[in-house]
Image (cartoon, rainbow, N blue to C red; front, side, top):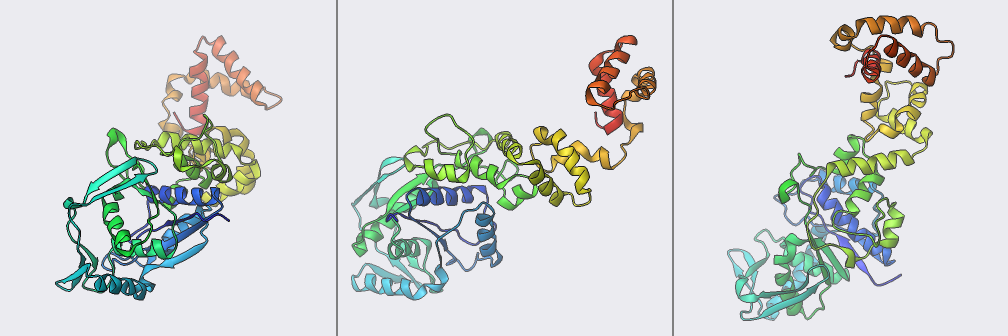
Length: 389
């Protein structure tokens, strides 16, 4: 085992969205690649925003994508530890009380620098940093204080987090210096953006893992897609299993520029992973989505629609006419190609072997005889059989 230790440190204020999960994924991949340790740390010190069920949602989100953790910590159970370190800062005269809270005294005219593993050298002047709160009036530590103490106590070697935390890093460096501790290495990852390079909205894709799974996306596809949002493999390969990602992942290949969330690309990944499933496995998974359909009938249909399905939910769109009669009256092709349809009904009755090739030839022969467009005729048959345009 190497000495690499990473952590995913979410705040339980709601169900984590896809951006949070990418942070967890990158920390997981790096730890596993280095044969290190991956810690799940629940940062619940903001009691006003704490949502109890969020803890389970965080864990289930990770489990659903097979992102296992080695250790689990909860900050609200570590209050004595934070106050022990607060006493050390008090003894050094580096903090003071302010209306019930405790603030850290920021030394001025200091240059704070670190070599970010993604962005390179970053420099901040301490003059732009105001004295900041370490412990709130309710006795709970702030994110800045608890995070630094925990990263030191848990021997975190690499902090992989969103680049929105770059501006907080100077505060953390001041605390590391105050305690005389060595800081971990920082890798600030670019945010996932939506269309127009704007903040990703829920409509564009900032949804939870649960929502994507409920829409019929495979865990394998979500992991594959998220891994390539801000990270690039050594070659042009796009399809990766979780194990393959572990083998190939490196911080050096995380991009500086923000990736754009592309739903069509996610759909493409899902289609690729659906096609990798055996027909039996796919049948079982579809049955979970549509338990009202007979398993035997689903199994017969899988070979016909497997290549065309981009999510499990699309099975119903492709096949519902097999289980429910379509609304024929609403189909425009009936009136437009009435004579053709009448002729087809007669010719279909003469087909001896009900095979796809012979059915297609019958349609083409009727279209040619009546001087109708072949494609339009095939579309008309599809309209009538399926109720779909």
